[in-house]
Amino acid sequence: MSYARNLLSRGEEVVHASRQHWFAVIARTWLWILLAIVALALLLWIGTNQPVLDNEMVDGVLTVIAVASLLGAAAWVAFVMWDWRNQEWMITTRRVIRAEGVLNKSMSDSGLEKINDARLDQSVFGRIFGFGTLDILTAAEEMGGSNVADFPMIADPIEFKKAMLDQKEMLERPDLARPRYQSPGPAPDMQRAEPMAPRAGSDRVAVHADEERLVEAPAAVPPVPVEPRSPADDLASTLERLAGLRDKGLITPEEYEAKKTDLLERM
Image (cartoon, rainbow, N blue to C red; front, side):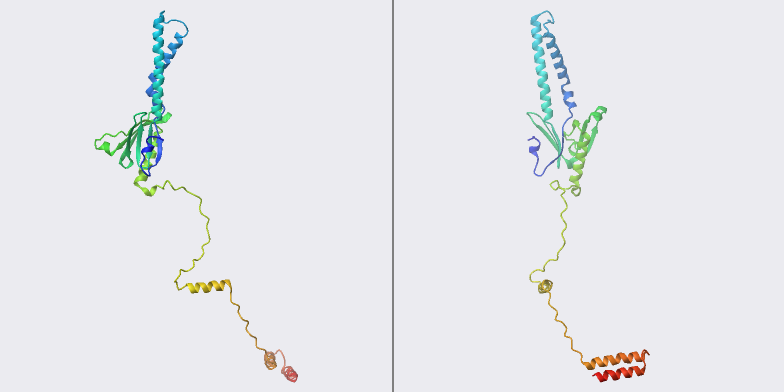
């Protein structure tokens, strides 16, 4: 577990992490690397059984110095790389943190709400290889205080600066920040809305129960009784139709009287 992450407060999360570019390791160790190359070349020369100054004692001293220089250079380069690996320059939901050190740890942090400005310097090589120096101006620096807030030769400085400014804006305007613990999920299946039953004690309970009984078992409608028609009613309706035909001129009065007489005789 990293040193800086153990010091995060409750609910604080890391949103971006970085460290110095690997060019910073070369900048701190290039003299030692050159010394190691010279020492290795001297050992190879002495190892060819060709005395350097025609003196075995001098060759022995040079061998000891070359071995010591080679081991010292290798140890220092390893220590610098170990220190580089322990650098933790990160942005959390609340702070900008700079933690470093191998045995003796050093940590400084600045609240995002105290950051007023940030200046980024990139050389031509920095733009090509992706490193630069980021200086953060805080409220403590404006008041004359000392605050270690600069990040020399930081890797991907543009991404670090953008993440810092974005998180600062989200902290100042919470409506722009979606909770990190919420992740978008699939939309729930739509269900057909059904009417809710009335609550107990409502005056609609009895009506609702009656409606359910009507839906479940509709009441049978009794058939309308048909009264039998008498022969006199049939004769009267027939004579009315014949009279209508006579009035329209479809039959003659003689035909009407003959048909009338015939029907009366059948009764």
